[in-house]
Length: 363
Ligand SMILES: *Cc1c(COP(=O)(O)O)cnc(C)c1O
Image (tube, rainbow, N blue to C red):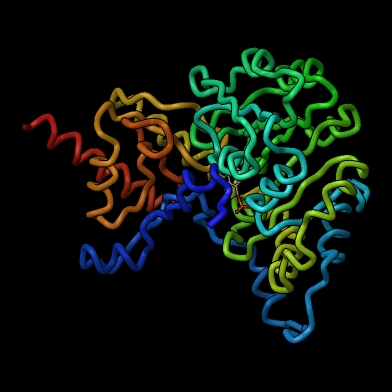
């Protein structure tokens, strides 16, 4: 059959073990999943209120324009409604942007390691990927600029970066945006935007740099990963050009309603951010006490280097019902990425890790 050649080398997304898998595998009752950076505090109670008082028909197609969610988002962020595109999670937006710009002969620049979907989408479109190594967990913006040429169509900036959590400050992003050729689209992935304690006003960059698109999601701090809603913010011109690629009904009626309700509870978001910072600090202290190196994180996760096979550490935690992400498949073979959970959950993780390290010394 006539498959696209480049597709044959791609692997399907490998989901981590599910809660049910781990229960069965280890005969455990209680499982804590801290592997995919979901919000351990759940979501705003406004979401349940909205979903318990539905007035919709499941027989009718959803509003393809996501009008109510669009109006709410535009109003909260002080944007024009034409500056927004909604997607089936940010994952779909990565695909939409890539489909719009990438083809054989073109290239796209990204950090490495970073969120894997950028590369995946580029390969599907037959474009060349140019990966620029992180320096100490941070994007190397100078070398990313150097990697560009006349055939570069997109540059991806994941801020804070997944899996390191490192956050590029305003001055550096600005300096970068000023130097990127104006015909290269800069995609700023802000999946963890609301976790950042000292964030800059990236939306103001949209006015200043017409080649910029920002991606955000309801999957992380809003706690609605299963509803699959993400969005992009850019100039009306860029949004209008992307729109024909989007599937007509890419966000569903329940997702739109849940996201709209979640957006109206910014106090919930602020509470989660504060708690996350407090809990991150405890991880830092733990790492310092135990001589473990880590990256400073502005996300709801921390990448800790254990200096040994990451799969072993992940397995050890798994056997205790704690699901985390081995860094092996993330480009950090001796590190483990742990989602910051609730206080009690984090304490369980740290005490299991402590046990592992004590046992190691006793050997
Ligand atoms: C989780 C994540 C996303 C994707 O989220 P969706 O659920 O598809 O909205 C995008 N970018 C980064 C960096 C992420 O970590």
